[in-house]
Image 1 (spheres, rainbow, N blue to C red):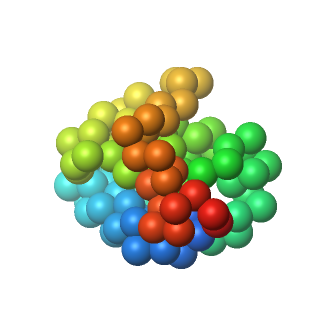
Image 2: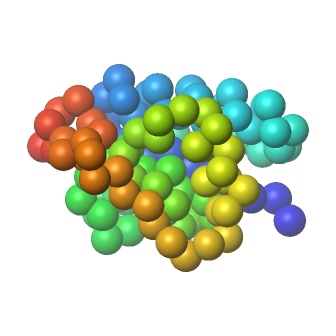
Length: 102
């Protein structure tokens, strides 16, 4: 079964960086799928979240904020079927350059 991988964000530089890194990671992992980039903030809100960026796998958020490196993104993708959402508590802005205002 092919996984659906999405990056949701406001379109800010941090969100775009997560999208680009996620695309690199799936190539490195040999995953044959596209990473979808969604800038509709209402989709983030519909997931019950109030900050971005969001990494979602198969429609479920698996991380909110900016992972520290590509290895963390790989780990999140491998655990993608988990129901656990990991939120980056160190970054109070929600990871977005808008300061959490998006």
